[in-house]
Length: 432
Image (cartoon, rainbow, N blue to C red; front, side, top):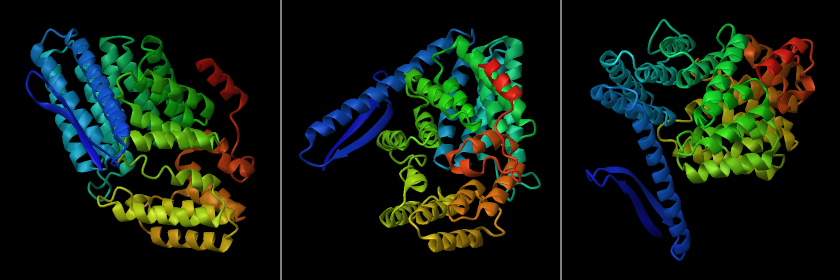
């Protein structure tokens, strides 16, 4: 093997800012050179974006100490987000709470500066992803804790907007938070989606280069079942992200939207991009499997899926994919059903049911199971499972009714799945 290590070093202090080791087979020196060029370009784009953001922030406050606190808090918040993505929830909580403390201190030093307030909102929003489970912190439930954190984020955004009406960074935070609250199944989800979309579009009218707001809008549109619009918004996010701050999330969401549009070749392209650019990121570790669940139909694909799952779970030393045990097997059940092995698919369904029975720590994956039940001819069971899913999250209705999985039962009266009414369509057209 040929190996190179690329390091980005601050020339003033000698501090190493980032590093990455690259390897290619011996004899492929040109490939290694291209990898180095790509990595250096990535380092520089990210660092340049950070420098520009810091200078813009510095011009907004007269307190050098407050600016320094926000700078340190931003670093902690980014590290907390990275820990969350890597499923290190304890580390993430610690980093994000420390960030919140620094933002609060900065706000006391310069009460007129909105950046610390918005920073606290983003920290609260990220904390929603790593809230303790019901077993760790009774009597609240994970959903309650998550909603509380998201409500805090909305409150910080409202506070920043009272201080600076129409501030795009505060609108972006509130739109993002409302979208998350809606997707968590909170009461009034339909209204939250409407207001969240309005906030995000208002923020983008002021800041059309804001990749994070384009991503949030794409995620919201996908959840609302408007997959083609979601693809457009996510493409805008991808192209607007000059400094590569949001790309892993954008690429991951774009992959799922391509699947919802049944654009399997496009989904494979996004999966390949994610695997190449973000090796080790759990968001892409299973992306080869998911299209096979929707399109695979041979015994060779079934064997490949089992081998891939075994390799993923054997290498999962941190337990990142523990909660996806059932989902992985439902994917193989779908392939088995399409390959004409209905008995095997039913046996897998039974094993998943037995494994998850009485375990609150394992999600039921009702939509995935409903899909498999349809494939093996158990329509009534599929309808019942989707009805249960909709009782828990009524705002998922549009996404389910427009999903290619459930086309054949979208009009089932027992499920009461229906397309948006004319008034809802008019409302959506008005928002756009």
